[in-house]
Length: 252
Image (cartoon, rainbow, N blue to C red; front, side):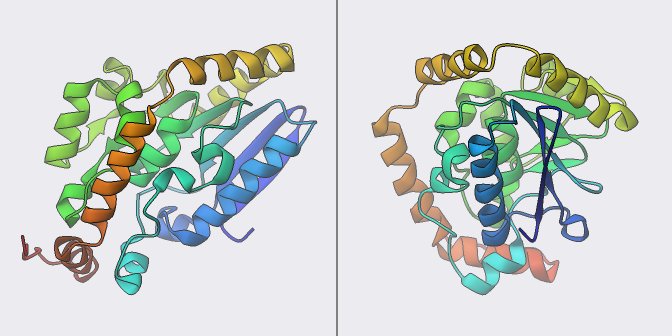
């Protein structure tokens, strides 16, 4: 794996996004490496709980605008197929997210909101800036289970981020800790989880995920909307303007 590190120590798997020079930007290679890492975690009998983190100043800044511009279209019409079992909601071992700095777009929806427990540093920022580059958010049904509707709407239509304390007050995250304590706090919780019955922990997560499962109709409708937006002229212009550091000229 080029952009993701995987290791296990005393029952705790560490999954680290390691592309700090690009603020762990999301793209096809990052998705591929995370797919492999989560599958390794699933298959690793020695791993009872995982901590997902990003190396450097950011957890994940969101979509890689340069890659999007080069491809002139979406990575996939079905975002939930990203990252294999993790993206499909079929990973029943627990994942704790350790979130610092920018957690935006795909970093928020595809990664942070799929973590079972979310611990953030004081400098964390949570945002959905997609409208600023001409596309819609993906995985909205999933996000709406984890973010109050009015807050999700505000983030979706303004593109402006929330700081860690407001995210905590909204129930988006479990805890805010000093920047230099982030990984220590995540590992401390992971050690507590690792001491419990592995079977009971897995079944507890599976039971909850089944109880809040998104309907197929909602999934199908989102695929249609996401595909319509991600291939639009506005999306191409929005990402191009972002790369060129200028204001977009909307086509719609």
